[in-house]
Length: 262
Length: 315
Ligand SMILES: [Fe+2]
Ligand SMILES: [Fe+2]
Ligand SMILES: [Fe+2]
Image (cartoon, rainbow over all chains, first blue to last red; front, top):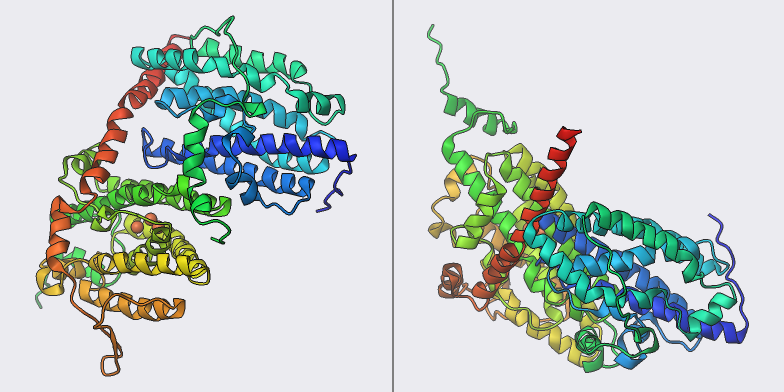
């Protein structure tokens, strides 16, 4: 197989791209971490396996992004330096993915919101001009398609299941929908890279995303939330309180025993 | 000339003696079926509960690579649980009933999982020693007399040997690392050594069912035979790592071509079996909690499937 040579960028673009790839890496890692908290505690063995599977996909994707980010930065930092030695305010994941697992309904709603964005994003990135980002996206988009199918089917099951499942999924939507808007609201870095054609135009992705949500919610007999006030800040390092605890656990070993190889 | 007809039971034993597999539709003695259900479901429960002590460390793994390997490993154990529950189902047991027996404490699981995992080196010891002991127990079961069980064990053993290697590799990395890492490795070995020796079960003299199980070829070596094999395998590996097995009685014995070693603390063994290990309550509690909190999810899935079926029939 022939591998396309890495794309060259101006130093300014390279710095922006480093920030963006790091944001993608943080997002995948934090979501993987949350999903991995389910391991051994799922509602049924088959779904325990599915959750671990999805966590592993996100972890693999995170590692690819971190490795590429380290390369773009060119300061000799490794994937582990980037993941384990940055503080909460330096993390760039959107608020959605750091939200606690809650019950299975909350995990599914969080996943469905992110999968909808993730799948459509990767579809664009795989055709983008940066060859390395495109290669990561091309590999991950197949996994993302499966994730989206899985979380969509669960939204439908829970919405159109029992009274209790419906109540729980509605409650999860009420508490998590406010984090959906940040995904498609570009921050300064994303705006610059969108102008440079390296990051897709989110506004152009929205109709397809909304159509998918409408289709799934209709089958789930759930109303699509309207007029929700959208929170943001994670992509600029202003997080909810949950992230600090997550990082304390994630980074425990590297912080306790600095500089060792494991 | 007089022909002697074999009874059903004698025919069954003759097949086993000839190493012909028993399959789900074949006649089998009730006691064989019951013993197998107990053995396979206990094994399945062990895979399930065994996810917990290692699952503990997924969120704290020291590098992204380790996190990924550990998560994949614990996920494998869930897969083993599934294969084994399916194998037990071919004998007429239902998964719901098997789980109910686990949750009520009627069914047992391997006591090793009632010990806590306290440091990262425990991930090394669990893979290296616990999966190592499991392999010794399980490789002979790939040739066990009951077909579905034997086939499940072939798949399980392949993955277990990978688990063991990654555990050993964690230990090796620690032992080649900074002094604090080597200390961590030794401290973990000190805690895990004796409990893993207990994984092979009571002494042969205290294991009354062994003879019948060996006749049925659902057990192929005695507990003491396996324990000896384990010690013979692990002592040189510990030496290779530069670690000391916490048993002053360990000594090469050329006459028996194996190591002598000290006696397990059987009082501790029976205490943990009876539910008095440090983590018995937490482990079983975690399983019960996951099951109870998952009830509404399982009900929703069933209710939705029923609605779909209903709608399809109306079209
Ligand atoms: Fe296993
Ligand atoms: Fe096992
Ligand atoms: Fe294993």
